[in-house]
Length: 336
Ligand SMILES: [Zn+2]
Ligand SMILES: [Zn+2]
Image: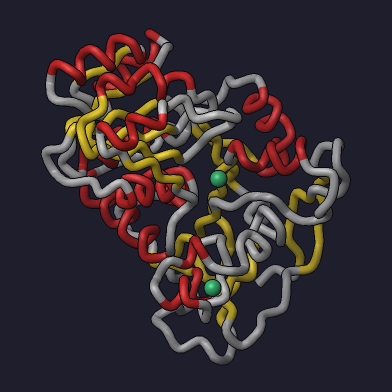
């Protein structure tokens, strides 16, 4: 096996990532070493690199998938060298009440041990991963197609689950980007009727190809949904929250508004509506390792694939420039 690996490191705030060769990390007894075959690029990576003033250095990237290259002496699961795995990058403590309840995304460690957001992640040829965080990857999914499920697909799957999604419901998905385009396919696979909400006319056809029964802008979506009894779940994947407010006349009684993204200061929902319509508003962050296993199985069974662009690891800074310019359709994947 190789002894050194290529990595892209966030070394200093305000600077592009630096490409280096460094030694492959040693394993603890309960770790596995993953040879990364594909690693998705998430908008959150830019928030870290462009927005943070401290925390460097570490290797970004929290959507890694690959093959087990080595296992620690204490690893007893079916994780053997050669096994295909997806990495659940939130290295939760495994002991707090949230972890014990299977809600590892709510672990008391928060994001302090999150591969690619606070400790070394997936922009690398190899990654040391606690064995519990290596999730079997179904053979039906190729590596590049699987990578975006580690954050984008997982986040929207868990958000729909937290919203209480059931077959036959009407689900409005706001925003058709890295998260939203997968949310349409996932909600459709779960049996929902999806209304895709986007201001971009050129994305409505793609939404229908992914299974949406209807696609259009927020005012039209509100009218359409109101005529049909309202959306049981509104899943927001966009940063701006204005469309959430516009959509309110199209929300069903006892409906859930689930925020998987939000940049605004104020949620444009009149408080009286919480009571009058018995609305629930839920914030959903990431997802658990069980959610990751389930969404990968769902994707394999229903042939859900992200729309991706593939790049070599060494082009990571150019990929970030594309993402900043909003030119990526809809997920960039690095192939280390
Ligand atoms: Zn992400
Ligand atoms: Zn925990």
